[in-house]
Length: 291
Image 1 (cartoon, rainbow, N blue to C red):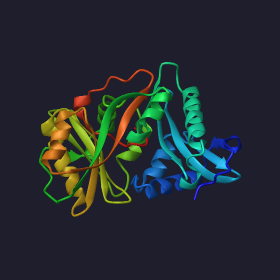
Image 2 (tube, helix red, strand yellow):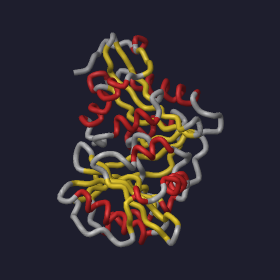
Image 3 (cartoon, helix red, strand yellow):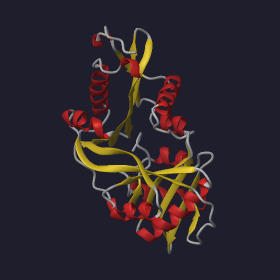
Image 4 (tube, one colour):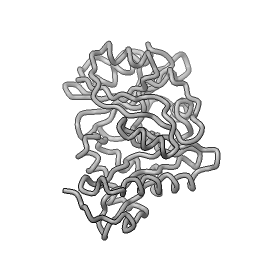
């Protein structure tokens, strides 16, 4: 059912409360986005001012994230309108309000990124976002195997090393997020060393359905493969997913060699100058929701 007499002028856009964010996460689960079981707390604590609610006649009908990483980089995600309120111009109004608000929270040189579903790509382009590349979600089934000798629990590696490695593969530093992300319950976080240097790390976390690997960063395909094998074994007998940047040929070869199937995808888009990253080191992004 849709509400045919809706007036978009009555849409109230405001800051979201913590309890409302739980509702938004549940809607995301209903849409099949398969959020992580512990995402809500981690995402909220990364930037409590980074979530916007859309209200109509006192009812929460939509929302989204406008997370600012210390004003240096912004990410728009979790864009959702309740199904019965779609097609009325409310989503458009919310989306542009979110972009304007996030711009006001960033430095003038900062860019905004987003991962948008393919059929909304034209709309986001009209909003000033430029397409960079596709990110493809693959699904497999975990199988327990012994951990390769090359990998080590990330908890045994100094956080400073993990922080610097992550910052080299993400548009800006995200210390608070990272500390919580690599230590969440029901997860496995692993690193791989090249001599005295960290040469890759990855995390697999429990989701509503199975597990997700993300991020998976590594200096080369061999290291990425060892990390992938070790992380996927954590999902023994269950589904696991990984969101792979299509521009990394080695990453695409890795998931296809393991027989994973493509199940979903998004377009990575940027508003402002695209950040320069080591794309060939990014085998799996962290999340579609916060970058």
